Figure (spheres, rainbow, N blue to C red):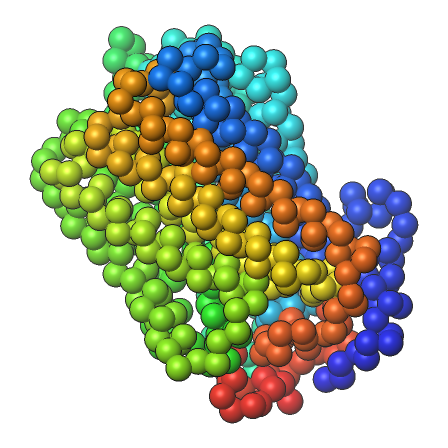
Length: 542
């Protein structure tokens, strides 16, 4: 397996990024790397749209009586923020961007199994996103991102169906992506790449794909039923029509709790790659970490009822869901303990990707521990529907998934772009994001404990100080997210040319040029060693 010398890199960059000129070549590409970059541009745009809604909400909440927007507009803002961030950023971010770009290279394949389906998945994502944005521009929707019935199915006078159809279409994008990954990982691994030589990122993507395939159709069916009741007045969820509103919650959370792990499992895979590389050690307990990904995927389908402790469901069902919710913490804890053991006595270098990975571990652990309060029936009764829920969710999703996403972007940016970025600015951005995040969301734990309900446009004056702290943190966090956008864009033109393997990593993706040639490898690699043989000084190739 030959590595392309640096002096030939410019020719290879032209071959991969500008192999054919013009927009048409990108819109009809079947190259998984280009499709990953199309997702990167689309998802980044949606991230900043959803973030703008969050900024407006936080500015509104500086004052107890909220002088910025009307209560109806506030309802539309938190709905817009939730829908865009959950369905159009958090769920597709790592699988669609890093997964698309990396999965074939990490297993030694030339592309995904179904390149045309891969391109179709991006078009479906764009169709769903554009329909949702058009509904928001036309007046928005005020149901919250959970679309709870019967308000959403009968009483709401906003553009519920347009947004629901946008999310429905986007769900098929996820299904096609998951199908592509499962088939590719099963059928297209390089010679010698056995299941227990796979990188942990691949295990995480495989587990995530299983959730895509089994969970997303349930959400699609739920949205169809919502539409039938709203348009045809069929009695499914509305009690006045003979329906049951709790049925919607059961169906919605059967998908949406596993969706939490769609957001976080790929991030765990990213962190495993970064921790091993920047501590120069093999992952402690590789087999346990791999199986924990599959365990999380399996148990995640059994815990949806902990979202419904206060809905009147059977106390016995509540006890079972509570026990299962504590169980799902075990495989997550295995990962955290094994990452910590990997770091122990490692030769650690604190490059920007490592800072993001360490930030992920700290923030995700905080989110996981606070989740135990919500898994317990007694404390959940008090905390349900308060800002404690908001803080917990964001420590998992933003503190976890977004930190891992940024860590992965920084780790593989030289491979994606063929350029290096400013490590000083990248470290500074990681610190700003970490500080801004904690200042934004830690006060919300206290607000929730004190009883401030979420989704209210107004609040008692005694909560103002904590809300001002949260808004100040959101301002810092927003700046932190803008900084990487600037220096990464700058690096595309002015950054130093990246070598094939700037970090000294062990994955197959680092054994080809930066950026890769169109077919990924000049020759099919043959794998002869495990994924993380850092302490043996061996390459994982023949």
